Length: 503
Image 1 (tube, rainbow, N blue to C red):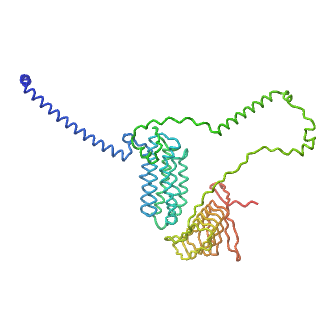
Image 2: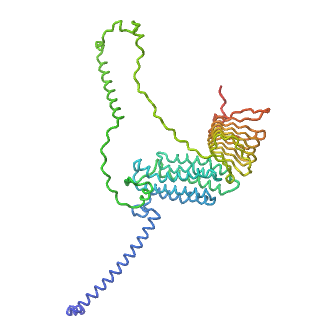
Image 3: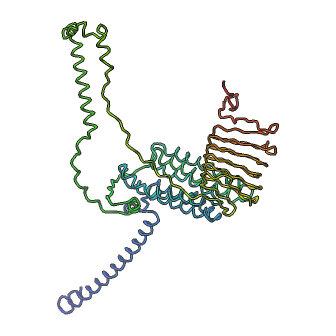
């Protein structure tokens, strides 16, 4: 109290106290501002890291949709295991796996977009799906460019099944579509297992990890997208110049609301087809009304008929029969528009040894092709050859005939398998020995066995007109391979046997 009273009596002391308090307040403000700045920096860095790692939606931490998180788990689990096994094998398999990873990343971007927006119109949705389709095409083209690779079965397994990523466009049953694509892959993965099961475990692990991806994806779809992709609630308008990649990239970024769309154009006039259809419909209704009106006349309907004399009746006047021919209603001449057939893309014929694979490709009308310098570990791959004859001398590992027509094959000895796929009118003659001949999706295949190859196994699927010719008394005796089968239940299991030929 004494100090306060003295301060009131002394104006200079009062001024000093005010200056001291102002200085103290300024210091507190500076300290507070520095603390706020530090706090903002910490929050900003935390927000940036969370947004980058978790794709924060609308600035809310943990805003990623559950089905996006589940897809992330799939990529971090089975997909990562497949990538690791592909890296162990290396070469084309590793490069192919990188393309598959890019396809999955594109699909994840689509799922993020779907979680944040309503389903767009079909035209816009196809634009959004474009990045995924481009990645799938890249994977498939890689297989086509490396047909001579020793890892061709690996590449084919991927190429045949990667379209399963298109399940996002399948409704209402995306799950079965993935299974269908997976079944296409097993045809080639079984080959990989057969070639490496007893020699290299890495390839076996690779097959298991790859097939696990699609099994996990089917389970994922069943849980989150049973009847189709689960879309969000926000409406998204696609700019006319935007592309799918840009749209998916923007989907995880908060953006300002788009400008209002331009006013709709005036309605187009109805198409001529609709106009004619409506006119025809009106004519039919008018004719029907007239018919009912005549029927309602009852007996008076005959009053409108006029009398016809005998001279005007054709059955009583022969002249009328000779003069009048059958009347024909005029019909419009329908001249088909000339259509230009698509140009047939031709490739240069190929016959070369690439590594341990003999490549015989795009040969047409070539007779007497001979492969003589062979080794036990070599394989022969014959692709898209027509009206061609190929002879393989010596003992080799295997022979594959793919997409050929009117092809003749003569070979000495094969220690593995001779396989015919997607072909027509194939003739095969065995001079030595072969343990197995496989015929798949082929129409017309004649196999001439030698005395040493009588015990050869013939495995066929989805094929027709198959005949096996066995040596008999200096000639050949022909036996058709059954195409029809009869299956019955014996009380405990299904029993399948060839159906007897009728007639």
